[in-house]
Length: 142
Image 1 (cartoon, one colour):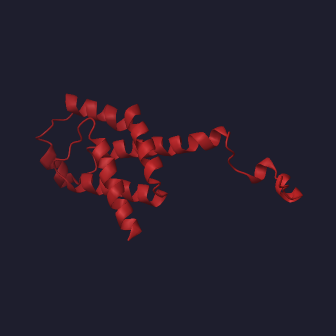
Image 2: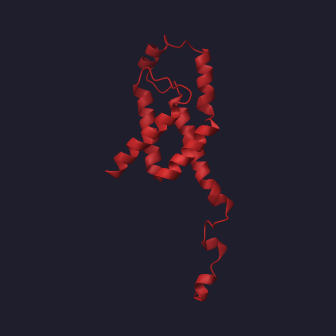
Image 3: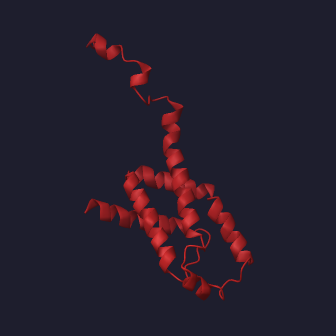
């Protein structure tokens, strides 16, 4: 039997931020996934990121306060639980850094800012999140 030095066995709970049974350690990835999913949905389903000239071009497509706008608003402000679980699995599998997540969100912002006809459909946020994170990871790695 191997015995550990006294200094190793006398570690205080304060020196170890997360232990195996720690509730905070188990919920931290879920919180990151929840906030990432919220930001992806907020950006993807937003219709107010465009410049005034681009908004004028969009105004004839969906009149203000149409049923599409209210459905998009619901998706924008509250991501589906399935999408949060998807983002959790995606982030857990890929182990991307926070800078990749932020850059992926920036790519979605730039897409919505420049694309005149990019209205997100329900369920399309999965593809956008995967592509944005894939491109961001590729950029950060090289």
